[in-house]
Length: 189
Length: 164
Image (tube, rainbow over all chains, first blue to last red; front, side, top):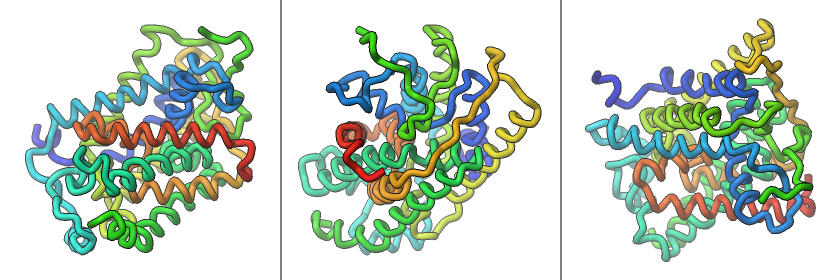
């Protein structure tokens, strides 16, 4: 049973994630996409008469249940199937991040950034509020995220999804290599 | 209360990549399968450490193959699955013909995609992992999720004024 607590390699995780595509299609003619759940939350909680949020979100409850499942799955994996060892992060990445002021490399997310103490600080404003806003705004403007475009869209051989994925990557590379260092200095790292 | 003039998500609506093409609504017990599928998906997210901010940093710094392997093999599995469904004319369990809606080019895929990419490298999460991170006990990510909902709402508010 060792395999279950060890981190799963990419060639196990990738195909399992890919199988979500046919599973959703066959179970209920549904297309895989996670960022849509954020839209359904808006439509359900604060549609504010905006045309973009005026649709029958109740028919999309399946999507909200799916993301609730992802949350529960995260809880189960962390509490019952957890890897007893600390996460193994590439030496090169650790060195790069140490230079930026990250000191905690013991869990999946660095406590230097992702902790409640940072909430009402410049760090929290940048990483939680602005970062989260860009994820929500950008995915909806792009019409999908890594699941809807990169996995579902490219799997069905649609070039607009390949284009969107290319720009996800361009944005990510630019943030990592150009903006992250000055931004982290700015917020006090 | 369900407002009478509320429409279903239009399949042709370019803003929606996850339309529900099942003709009849599903209720109660029928919906549990999506919850179970989500749970399995969330377990894979954590076990393969895809929800880790460090794995995303490794990916964008080209210092690990892990994330490229995960996304690449997921896409290959998806391509093979969809081709099999099409060629063997596999039906859904309800006997419906399986449909994959076509995506049209829009400027948002470039501009919005770029904005999401910036946020992805910052938060270390796309929308899926946000939910799994919260479940894993990183409760402060609830704030990131709320901000993402706010970002979605602001997009919806100004959708018609943005270049598309």
